[in-house]
Amino acid sequence: MARMHRRWSIFTLALGFQFAGCHHRTNSTPELLRTDDFRYKAASAVVGRVSDTLRVTVVVLNQSRDPRLVPVSSACAPFNRINAKVTGNGKEWNSDMWRPAKQQETQDASGRPIIHACAMQAFGLLPGKSTTFVLLMPVKDVLGDSLPEGRYHVTASVRVSGTQVRGLNAGEVKLSSPPI
Image 1: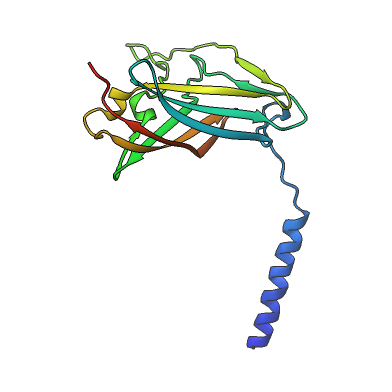
Image 2: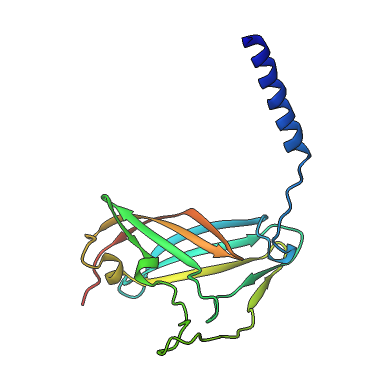
């Protein structure tokens, strides 16, 4: 009985692999908006005359053979392009909490729906070309009242064509309160 069960299990498993191998997955993303061949690199630095600004940059390189479109945040579809997490000593600061994406109102004061019309805005990214996205934050806002001065690790994420790429190592920075 055990031998027959083992053969049946092996047959079922082999049939499952055969079926899965014949299945072609379709991608619903239009070719022009795909990000499969994009490569990402992040960096961070403290900048400004008095080292009062944290700058996080993400470079996006189109390694495909085709041009791509990258939608831009708009009033109808707002989003934060770059998110930064600053971590150290068991504490964390997140830029999305500091500056959340603002959604437009969907109802007026009387409860009636508000309808917005916006055109999609995008820019082209040619094959082999790159674009840089930048997030600037005042160091005093990052440190706020919960993070002490010190060395912190910065991790970035970027949203490109509806794809959220997380966990980009943006390096380490030393944050200290700028002089007043």
